[in-house]
Amino acid sequence: MVERYTHGHHESVLRSHSWRTVENSAAYLIPSIRAGLEVLDIGCGPGTITVDLAERVTPGRVIGLDAAAGVLDGARNLAAERNVTNAEFVEGDAYALDFADASFDIVHAHQTLQHLGDPVAALREMRRVVREDGVVAVRDVDYAGTMVYPETPGLQSWADLYQRVHRSNGGEPNAGRRLKQWAREAGFTRLESSASIWCFASDEERAWWGSSWHDRALKSEFAKHAVERGLATEEELQRIADAWSDWAAASDGWMGMPHGELLCRR
Image (cartoon, rainbow, N blue to C red):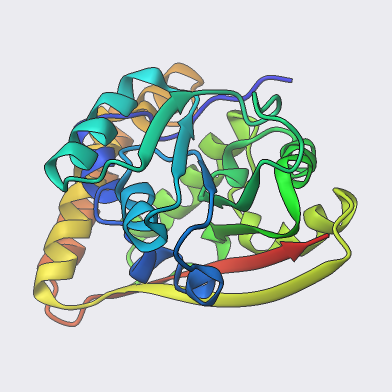
């Protein structure tokens, strides 16, 4: 099985990942969070959700796990800046979690399953390490459901190219709609499904999101993979980047990104 992380960890990627909080990226989980719980956050990246979780479960503990060791220093620095002492960050493999059975009350993964070649196997591992009365919480975007206005040729090219690049990396860009299927295949019997949307519409939101994707289209691993695999030329990537800049500048610009969410109990 060959899988690669589509986005990589370029500054333009971390810029958007660092925006994420429990409130804007895991609100469906909030009713399950309480003080004293032990939490595993898989695919934690720069740790903004992880640190937020740690603050909410104090004096419980949270472990943030990511396959990319280089991104974890930033997560540790964030925890130190916010005086969070109950969060630990470790390098690890979602397919082979280095924890005993029934170790956690909550196992959380945000935007992680879409990048895995075998999400069902990862969910089985999450099921193994969650306690009998605990919950596995997963949330993933569904790129094919993304809505954007104005609808321009450049952004349509981006949408088409993203599907091809993501799939060439072994992942599933439309993971949001498949979470329930994967969880059932992993052995979960009690599932609570929901959906939510990220919306970028204000001048500030468009400037932030549009500049992030302008830079990603030219400088991130996404761009590198697209060119190396013959899926796009540098000229085509430049047109996509320009389209993001044009969208950010459009006063009537709007974008909605739908996400599937799932609470899984044994």
